Image 1 (cartoon, rainbow, N blue to C red):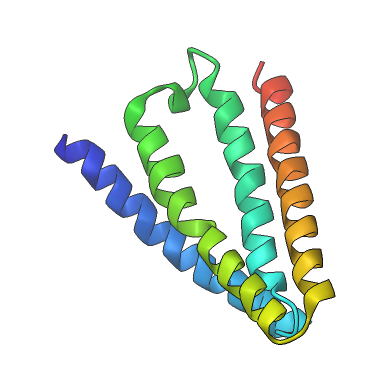
Image 2 (cartoon, rainbow, N blue to C red):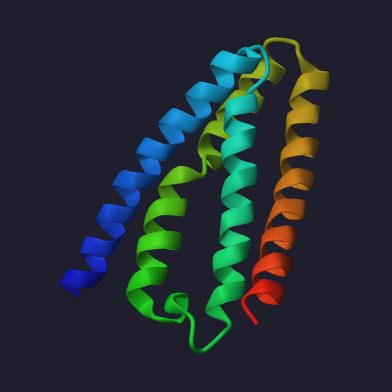
Length: 129
């Protein structure tokens, strides 16, 4: 039980730090009139969870064990991805009269995240054996 909680804590700390740096770097590069940083974090997180999900289906995989899964998926990716930020930013766009941008954020985020998780799963499933 302690090792499981420790894995979640370590993963969460690393995921939060990664989220801060990735989202900030993208926002500084592309601007903050559209939530590109949040979308980048969500799409890359979906891609990574696709890879880990595929690897977990292989018995010999590290991710088939509980603690690596807890560290990576529950901790790191749970803290790295930003669905709550996505929701708040979409609401802010809509409330600011930016309906088209709000709808674009929803559509692109969902489509890109589904494509990313599918791609990650496919790559890891075929690459990992």
